[in-house]
Amino acid sequence: MLKEFKEFISRGNVMDLAVGVIIGGAFTAIVNSLVKYIINPFLGLFVGAIDFSDLVFKIGNATFRVGSFLNAVINFLIIAFVVFLMVKGINKVLRQDKKEEAPAPKDPQLEVLEEIRDSLKKLDK
Image (cartoon, rainbow, N blue to C red; front, side, top):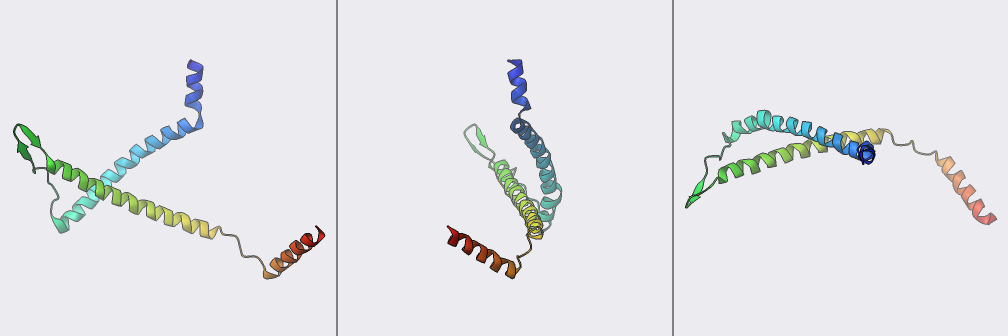
């Protein structure tokens, strides 16, 4: 059983998943820091402090902290937008790299010769 477990852990996809989770955790910390310390203060210049945490309502003995939920939703939307912009930028860079690797166009004479060759092959059959 220990041998099977070792084989399972040693598989590439399990290791890739583990690396992905670790990198994802680190990336989350970076994005959260970017939003908390750069983007939110920047937005605060225009909108003022965005804090709804004091917004609550009570029904009987139950307290509903709607403001904390709204803060979480706003932070999620900001983080999602930042990640969207980052992915969009990365994709743009990757597309530019692919454009640079595009093969050079064929010489028109070579294309005509290839067409003639292909036509002759069809006639031989």
